[in-house]
Image (cartoon, rainbow, N blue to C red; front, side):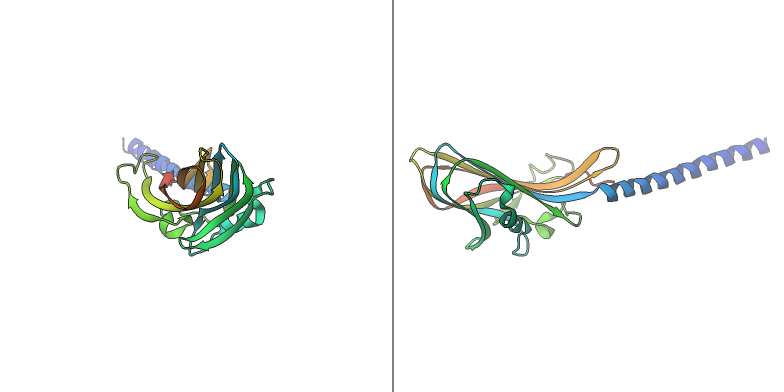
Length: 229
């Protein structure tokens, strides 16, 4: 009986050790897959929708900014949103509300523009307000506790006001909308694609000709996705 007991204990210990070693091996494999497949990027999208031609259009739009710089803005200036429409002129302007994207066109119509900028390090999607580019300017920023957790268990929502400058001539009954969307995104492959992100959006609707600043409401959602490898 003692011999059987010892054999039984030894077998259980062997199973425990084997499981432990297998777990360590799998964790190491997952880390390698994560490191080799990880891609981090910032995406920025501007959509102008109008049912009329906008003449002599000038727009100042919120940009992803950190420490008074914008790598997304610089990419737009260099690559023109990778767009084949040469009629738009882009620049970064230092306005009374901070750095913003300037878009100018003598005859503007609806257009959908986007750019992606890769990051050479993992993006802090949980705490972007302190550590990452976010759309600026932001006024009256509040933590929306009622909406937090709506997108994933770890997500938090913040609401704020921003500013958009629009100057153009058009018909008095023209309807124009401008929407802006940006996201910071990490994605990797471990038996399937996984990700985490933060994102922001805002939209403003305008009627007739414009010549000045308008307040626009925005929202920032942080901590969306998975944070376990």
